[in-house]
Structure formats: structure tokens, C-alpha cells
Length: 121
Image (cartoon, rainbow, N blue to C red):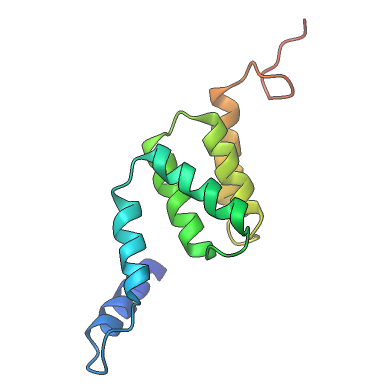
């Protein structure tokens, strides 16, 4: 069974257990809202939350928010680099994903100084 399949099964079991609801309302509300949010709003909320207390937002919530924003803006090199930097902050589990984001960002902006693909003047 894949990790995603196992996690999905565990989620189903935890929600359906007879001892009550295990997922806090605030978690369910966040997931629902971020799933359908505009990428600009997601990035703005991330910036606000992280500026207020950089460690307060759980890593899973940061990863989900950045992932959803990047999926909606796959050609935004600044966002891809920002998401990569955030992943590197909590690695090494996500270092490969962060490297992929950095590489995609570099391909999208090859003429920026200091980026791969630069041409000498």
C-alpha cells in the first residue's frame, strides 16, 4: 500500500470512529478554504502568517498552501523559489521537491543575473 493510500485510509478511519470527530474544525476549515482559494490570496495569507510568527503555521499547512499556489501559478518563478526555500527550511524530507521547484524556476527565468542560462555581457 502506498503512503498516500495508507494516509487516506487512516484519515477515513479517524473521521468515522465512534468516539467522535478527531479532526478539529479549524483544520477542516483551513483545508476547505485553501483548496479553493485564489493563489494571490494564498500567498498573501502565507506572508502575513509567517511574518507574524514564522513557526506558528504547521509545516503540513505551509506545504499544502504553497503546493496549491504553485499548481495554480506554475509559471511564476518567484513563487516557485519561495516555495522551494520554505521546503528547504523543513527538510531533508522535501529537499528533492525543493530542488525540482528551484530548477523549474531557473528554466522560467534564465536571463536573471546569477541564474543558470546567463549570457555574458
